[in-house]
Image (cartoon, rainbow, N blue to C red; front, top):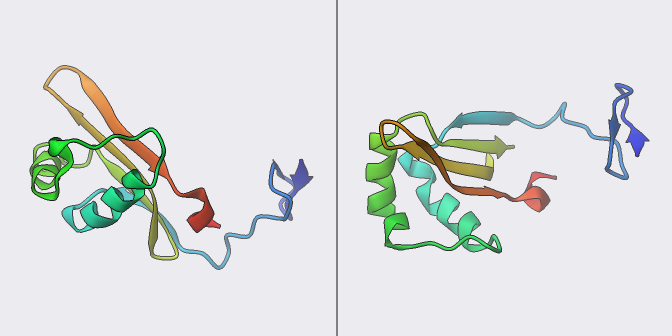
Length: 103
């Protein structure tokens, strides 16, 4: 563990510096679908089905607005979570994080 300039501990070998990065957590929109699919395909353990085709994902996002989120760092999508509900139960379908791209 090392200490950053703010005095907080973290597990990285170098200090964290977010001052120059633009980090945004926002709703997952249909324009994010191609990048999200690429990230899911590159993530071990995530299996995609016919439900994960772009046209089906677009419909899913319209039925479940603001449930799914993306994290962008410096304009690059680095994390995505696909969530929805059936009117009673909430579901988390896919969660992926590209930590290497985020650094």
